[in-house]
Length: 238
Image 1: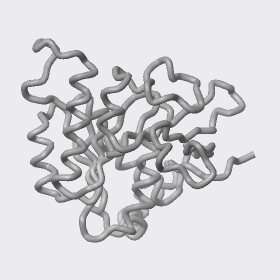
Image 2 (image 1 turned 180 degrees about the vertical axis):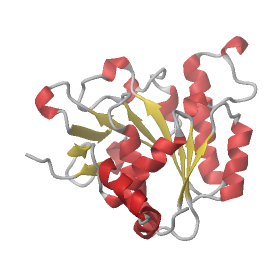
Image 3 (image 1 turned 90 degrees about the horizontal axis):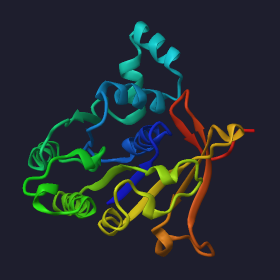
Image 4 (image 1 turned 120 degrees about the vertical axis):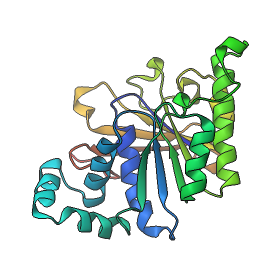
């Protein structure tokens, strides 16, 4: 599993819509399932359409009124139902697994897995928060192996990571080591508080030393966050 982490309101959802709409046309008939545990799922669907079509919301609305949006989106991602957003607010882990079994995804997004309820795991039982989270993220990893799919759990970055371009893995919310040890990689989305760098985002994998390209010590990149169109762009706009 690969944890995707960012501060609230800094583009974590858009990073996923950007990447998934690139991935979707390359997949076989198995879908991408986005288990949404944060906010309204309809908002994610709208963002997916923006990312897929590289258009601001005003143009998305115009296409909807013209009756061309649905087919244009389907053409962009391979099928209108290729990426399925399912709200799981208040769900238990066994309910989430039923969704996985039903849809048989190729890629599974577990948006804010921290909010999924797990039977037998609670603070009341004497377990620390980080220990509980470690078990949750271990479960996510097992789901990937058991159901033969790539798993992307999301997490927030703690307050200490605010305004930092490349947060460290110990800055995942409520966990210094638990989440980190239960995943294969961590994609941290950093940002700067400098007003002149408002649209810059910094992508890094602090755990990915073994996956680094030849001659590089870490996986790091600065990209441009096109908020209006829901895209992360490799080259920085000047």
